[in-house]
Image (cartoon, rainbow, N blue to C red; front, side):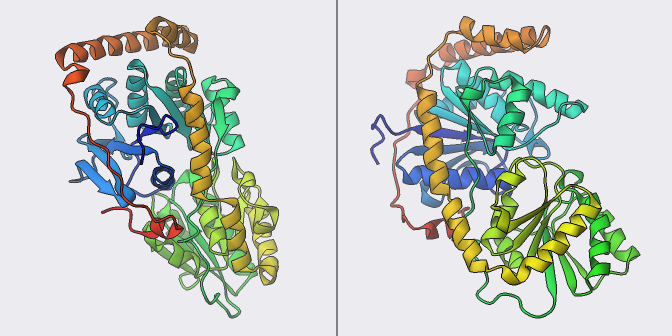
Amino acid sequence: MMMGDPQKHRILMVSDFFYPNFGGVENHIYYLSQCLLKLGHKVVVATHSYGNRSGVRYMTGGLKVYYVPWRPFVMQNTLPTFYGLLPIIRIILIRERITVVHGHQAFSTFCHEALMHARTMGYKVVFTDHSLYGFSDVGSIHMNKVLQFTLADVSQAICVSHTSKENTVLRSGLPPEKVFVVPNAVDTAIFKPAVNRPSGPEIVIVVISRLVYRKGVDLLVEVIPEVCRLHPNVRFIIGGDGPKRVRLEEMREKHSLQDRVEMLGAVQHVQVRSVLISGHIFLNSSLTEAFCIAILEAASCGLLTVSTRVGGVPEVLPDEMIVLAEPDPGDMVHAIQKAISMLPKIDPQVMHNRMRELYNWHDVAKRTEIVYDRALKCSNQNLLERLSRYLFCGAWAGKLFCLVMIVGFLLWQLLELWQPEDDIEEVSDFSLPHNCDEDMLEENPVK
């Protein structure tokens, strides 16, 4: 690997969300990093510690991960400190000779602080937004202001769908020409159909989701009994856990559906395929969704998808692989009935092959590589030029953001005096041989 090649980047991925935690953002960072390593780039991940997992760890393909000794505060997010991460982020950037810092997820405080400090030190930064937010509730208003602060000075931004791009531009005020759309992908080497498709008269509908309000659990509570009444041969398998699980259990008891609604609880990512291939239809009832990687995994396993028509979901799958419905119980029941009638025409292997053509992480990595190239071409600006951007964030908020950045700049200068950059030892680069087949990504990522 020629690290001195000007075409190659040295990338620091930053987020609160990474392995051993599991989710869409975690998978995105891991698979993107692996494919960027294959393309010859240097990739390092920085996240907070998980339990006793602290310090430097190496993962499949030589992916280096800094588990910063910073404990999560709530929902795997670290406590916002503004400047607490500055010393360690500075050392990582210098030691690894980073050229691009790539932050993930709007409600990751680790991401926001790392991007802020990276821009203070003159690094090019890229931000990927994985979620959709509203404009009227208190939580969304607060998050939109934080996002406006972070994106006021980013080099480039990435969204996972066109709907997500529109949402991000409206929330942050970022110029649309600085926002790229790069979708998620699925590892088709792992998510593949069963050798023998479930046969017999029984139809199994699978739901795998966090059981929270945003995922439409209240819709499921009304839809499942009606579908079971109309179709005696339908059975549901529900995987996932969350505060809304009690609503599903109450529904199961009320309608005496214990033998037709199976509750699996939390499902580890390595077990998702085994759950999916036991069914015929995948049901997604989300009330908001930027992309929904779960329906990609289901389609790759050969399941016909029924989903609410929200957010970026209509962009994800071709019409013949998904039945869309409004987030209304009656419309969802109708969509499930339509999907049941379509099942005889569904060939799981054909669906799998189509997904392999449409979505793969190598394509995502190459498109992200273009965004990095664009970021490096952005002009360097001094502190005064950067502060002018923050002033447009609001009459009071703009002045507050300027104050935060000025204090951050002064602290950085103090660190430069206390521990000059030349006194920080740079780490040596090394590379592991990569198997170019997708089988490499099947390995257990955590070592």
